[in-house]
Image 1 (cartoon, rainbow, N blue to C red):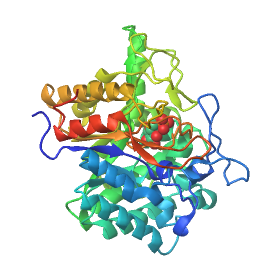
Image 2: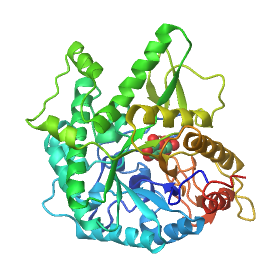
Image 3: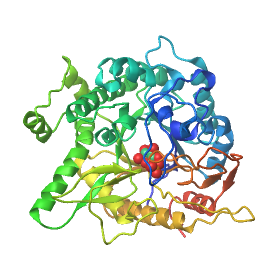
Length: 466
Ligand code: BG6
């Protein structure tokens, strides 16, 4: 068998994209709650407050808050060994700077973890997945302010003490490198100048490092990882200028992993700061905090690859990342993402060569429009094909390249709203949810063909992929 016993097969969601119940049981508003719905041709708008008459997908999402028992039972039916999910910070600290935690919020996640444990499912918990308490943005400018480090660490301490024994795997920030391309999602940052982004990222690094150290003190069994938003790229050609541009892009993105895995900034970044006159405000003792708080493993998402060259122009448009170049060798999804299973093996090798840490694929999946047949069945061979080919490449990385992969959790194992566009119709799930882009529907759950396929994959520990 290629995959070790105990390999963490499963699926992943994020609170703001699945839970809904956006003000239930004392929850406060988060940065995700003021993002409107959009489509592949229209951007999501950040309205900064909730405005009447506008549609905010996170407010209802797929009501995982109300359906979590049913949803976890379906995950268990597929044989999940792990469920990657996130805790909504504003359920625990509605304003981010509250004196005491909200007991109703804490109880909710107790119930979620108990439900997972009932079926032997290991929760893999993202502490902050694309949502920051809105009050922290309004009062402190969010991660631009050092105080947010303390608020976050207090939040982590609360979670670690409450859930030790129930949760072992933690991820501090979802796709932390997205600070460089989607700062509002990544940390409630409105400014887009490099000085602000790098200061906000610095505060997240310090916060994560402090959380890692604290977590290990609270429970030495904790495995605390980082989560890298998989932006992997090929050079446009063998023109040395294209190669250099691609290396620079890679370094710019992987710099986030450099700091969190090695505990210090790479020399090239420090030189870049010097050249661009970027001054990071630090506190005495920070260097040691970063050094001591390196992560135990690297989690990352992988959907597509990019092409980068000397004329690249990195942009985030209508829910997808592009560089201005296309890859003629690869097909694309309806939302413009290249389909590149081999790129996953390349990604695993890149990360392991550079850091030698265990790797967990936290997200991988195919967003598509699904059709419900008259008899209620949903045939999604395109999703099965996508996942099968990616699993084959992950297998090669383990079997041939010797990479220690500890888990694979597909994205949106149950249909949820899209982060990029807020749409419901961009579905990734094995489980269909009857809801549309306007938030209407019965919210009934049903099994797609891929549900039965993934069940077989897990049952055979990745051996039966047909
Ligand atoms: C990842 C995010 O980047 O991509 C998820 O961590 C997100 O939150 C996923 O949902 C897929 O992107 P989208 O835009 O299709 O939802």
